[in-house]
Length: 257
Length: 257
Image 1 (cartoon, one colour):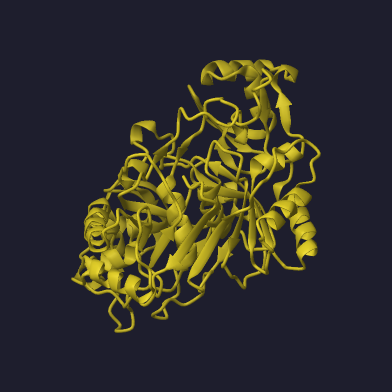
Image 2: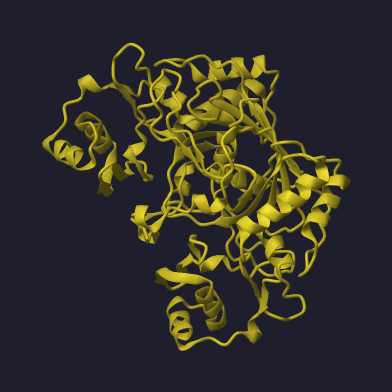
């Protein structure tokens, strides 16, 4: 955790619209150079899920989707497009809650989330073609590839997060969360560290990468793809790296699924 | 939301240990002055719940607590101190889940959280007296009082958040959340704003104050009271202010309690 007393959240300027097959590492490096931002050790490069998904070609034309009978029935219950529901089910291992206008699932990556994270905003209705954007195939793996590429380019051991915004149980409004991580402890276990009085900390496992994701989300804003990459500078940590899948609470420990 | 491209998280230096009856506004102002930090419009002053609770005298000696039969029975189930369970029940309207080592309640302020937010770390075992620290009585109200005081002192319309770290359903690790807010939209409703392609945003209610809380939490760290106040600079908003209680999902809309 930071003890330096100051953290900066710096938007990486001028990222272009991203298309399938684009070289994200090269485009992010160009943005960093444009902004005069040379990554340093323990800088965290935070990347919006949307541009990773687009680069991976995860944008699906709804006209290409044939809903199953199961998807059609569920679509009627939740009042959503049956083709969208088909995509949601194809990305999920289980429906957790379904109500009119609500479809919460367990994503194949373990995330409990609305609509399997499938997004219909900012995906290009301008040409009249309806599309939906799926989560990246393997966000921890993609974060690792980007970290290796950009780390080598700048000669600095930086960290990479891929983030999305999730709704939460019990609280209104979405908050940024990490769905991919490399080069840093996504989950930071501080148990056993003494507090100021020498008493062992009781609740001391931090969703470190989720807090960074929420911070970066403030700069990314919403409804705007102009700032999908944010450099977070000023944090420090000594714990070994672990991936974002460590942030998923195992079903065996979960009282709410 | 910020469009300026840079947000700073600045620790307010040199806050002393806080005791019951302390004038928090004066102590925070002294820290701001010490750090050369003069608040500006739309700066967000983020304050750890612990120091607010201490200033309010919410530190309770466990020896003064007599557990009820109900608290004793529940304490046996969850394997916690019956006096602590008595305090938890006294601050709660309902038990949501109880298991060995787990006690999740609905706090009287509406928060669904572990142990009613009652903290036993960093509350002074050095003298051998066991104490527990309860949440502030009215964190939105206290945020409002602090905002009015500090806003007048600096002649700037700043915002104040009081934050805690909560565990989450489905995800491991805690994340900062706002339990009190004044001078800013804790919940930011962006519905109806068009996205880049003119499609109306679908999921566009942001837990704005919670994201700021998580960001500030990165600087506050854990197991350390040296940095319980953080100034967040560089955000902007146009929506009207609303309090942190707006972040509580009403039971009628909640599928997980």
